[in-house]
Image 1 (cartoon, helix red, strand yellow):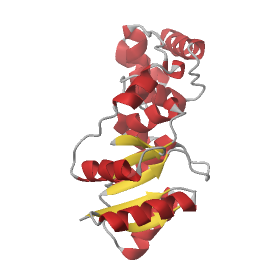
Image 2: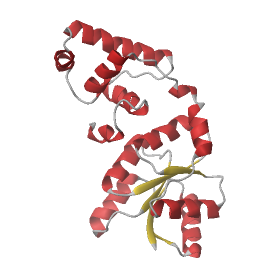
Image 3: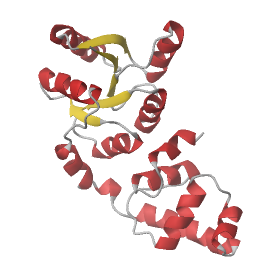
Image 4: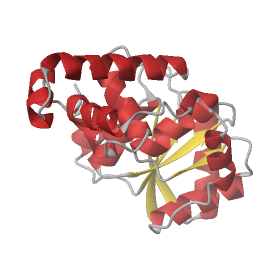
Length: 220
């Protein structure tokens, strides 16, 4: 039997899923709460191992981002299934980039949600063709068309190197590296994906496959 945590700031959703898991008998809900912080506090206080699967709402009411929540849970040792309405493909992509195993819609039948949990608990991938199509068609993730040099500057700078060190690594002047970063920011603004801070640049780099997702866990 797989262990499951339900994290959703709507109690009615959690109660419905918990009842469905109990009826199904293949999953044991060992935690139900409104935030990732509550789940981690429960883990610490109880000395419990990470659950097999966390069913996570895409947007929680505590001000956290989906990237933060998914990356934290994955780093803690759990697989994550996003349980979401189907109207935020940009946030869904963030979740998948951050390491979520897949997505199941809140409009899905409970049996489909249970099957998704079981699939992920077995270490198998979810079939997210529908979500992938929605994400691919989302203009929020239009390609910024970075040059190879700009991609290299972004990779080095976004993952922690100071701009001076980036210039030295690439054998260019500091002013050239700075101009590259400025052009990168402009290109992301032009496709509706602004990146005003270094953390934002890292997120864009992860979204576009320039930096591996684990780079996000080292931010902050």
